[in-house]
Amino acid sequence: MFRHQKNLQFEVKVDNPDPMLARQIQEVLGGQFGEMTVMMQYLFQGFNCRGEEKYKDMLMDIGTEEIGHVEMLCSLISQLLDGASPEDQAKAAEDPAMAAIMGGINPQHLLVSGLGGLPSNSNGVPWNGSYIVASGNLLADMRSNLHAETQGRLQVSRLYHMTKDEGVRATFRKMLARDRYHQYQWMAAIQELEEKNGVVVPASFPPEAELESQEEAYKFWSLSEGEESGKGPWANGSAPDGTGDFVYVSDPEPKGQVPKPKIPADHLHHDLGKHLVKN
Image 1 (cartoon, one colour):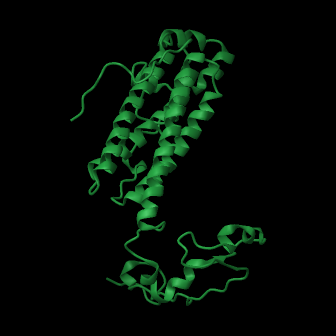
Image 2: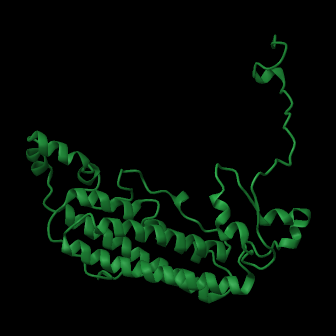
Image 3: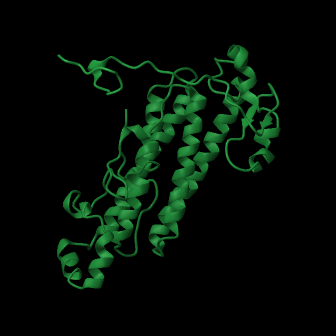
């Protein structure tokens, strides 16, 4: 079960209203890598987790924390919108220069949410469930979690430098610190899972099961102009799982056939056949 506590995880207090910043913060609330995404991703991974309880508990702990982060951002957005009434905006917009500046304000903060946060990104695109990854494979999911926290922290870092409001920055600093910890957490989980089962997902389909195709797992095909990519460890080093060494192929040749698909029946109206359908 879930229980809501009225206190926020950390204090949220802004110095001045800033409707434009409120719109920008929508990205880290309801965007692809926003708090709504990691909240739902961790919770669904936790709901569906099977096996060792410590992984399920960790996912549920962090997923529940992210619910609190969603509430923190909603509170932050609401405070930034306080004082930005429709009347004030209409009056300010009478000045052509001010109207141009205010063109970036999210009108849905007035029309839809009544000066509150929205489940959408900074351009008003609604959040959707296709953003989340919950595959049932722990290592695959933990890697997705690390990616999500990496992108989310990157975006909050950029927002931090888009405002001088110390109250907003203080909130961001707390979120940046927590996102840094979450990266540590997922890296630790990934390392543990890799030590148990290997670095390739899924571990249940080992290299030897690839049979005659196994050699293709070590070739770097150079398929763009220049050969600089051949200088990297991905082209000349050893595979992370120790099963083989990489080979740089500077001028790869195709190994497959030229497709020769059959022409469909005339009644599909593809205009490729010799005769037209009469009936």
